[in-house]
Image (cartoon, rainbow, N blue to C red; front, side, top):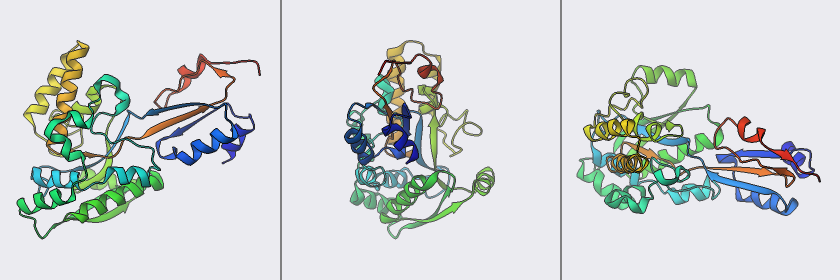
Length: 297
């Protein structure tokens, strides 16, 4: 609030709001108090928040259970509640990734797994032999802030609503890391890939070469993903890289390897006298700010 007051009185030139702090109310207030404010709003392509599960152990070794979990999530309700209306439905590729992004409606039959279909989810659970439900433990750290915790709790409730009964356990980072290293975490809320390149989104988190160290340690062994990933890291042609990335994205959604949360947004607010500054969607703003200048005012 102190920073916002400083911006309104002209003592602060640029403020950047990261994802969960983007709210329609905040935007409206600045627009009202400082109508000349320059707003730069964009999808966050770097942080892919998601629920991940171990796929080589029951119950998530059954693709029907994974798909049921995916269809249990009301992403629009999630966006309109915790995210204050500032979010986007997405899969492994965020909309800000430009040509690499594949819209849900372009995913063919896999698109339905990004939709809220609780009845279909329950039917899949019954088909998988879990008509009476199944019990799992959902681990989450306490280091991501209140919105981060709320998102994990919300996802836990979605799962439970279709028969994947989750015992939600919020633990400190040290405990979480120890359990994870020992292979004792079955289901968790985490970041499923971080970075600016397709290799960070659809290769490293899922390729069998990375499963033990750099990947999500989910037990994924998918020859299709491996072949697509190998081709992608060798490819230099942009159009072919886009095609491979999209194909891998569809495969990840279709097989239910990760349940991605809605895409987040960044908002940068800039005083009208600050020129030639382009907000960069990362944690390193120095280069983009260095070229800016202050116009007479």
